[in-house]
Length: 132
Image (tube, rainbow, N blue to C red; front, side):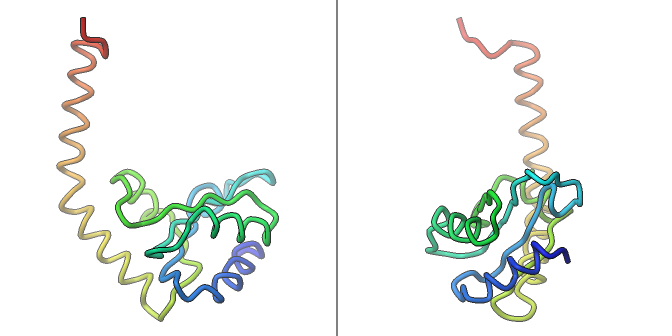
């Protein structure tokens, strides 16, 4: 874990209301530039995510984007599962529990999402976006 992620982990240890926190995007992939933001997905019901992002970003000295994992789009869930790094768990195993639940969701919902996306793209290719 990088120094930045270790500092984020330490900051989140004071936030019991955050059940799981996962870094994804360029910082998780190892492709971040010095000016890259930090993408953070959290399971934190009832938490003001804008305030949390502002607090953590100010403490870390980076722009920080926080998204809630309550009901994110399928492609984003897929990205987080593929590349995410769990940096905080309110209790041991919370990250693994989230991941297993999310993998089950992706197994059932991704085929539907793919069919609907492909149908919409085919329709746009055939008819365009405008309607008379």
